[in-house]
Image (tube, rainbow, N blue to C red; front, side):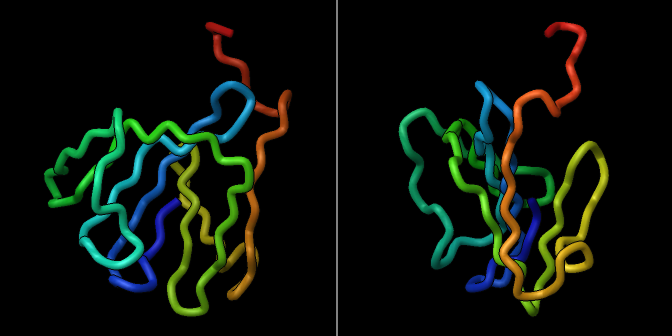
Length: 113
């Protein structure tokens, strides 16, 4: 999910995956420090820098029971999935809460599964 942070006005990208039957946040990418942005690493997390100056926190690996985003009236939220970009503002409208959940059996099976 890519969006502009409401306080420090810089891009943020939260990255998720399906793991053990649920949604897990595994990485966050951002460009500026400020209120509401992680400033300290927790155990097992790493900070690297992208070629574009981004700060990438990896190793978050936290299950998310209720994944919701409030679509800003000012900035859009972009869902990045399978190489496609989906505007939540166009899909759902401004000032809407959009919730995501994983339903077992709806995912594509890989050759390894």
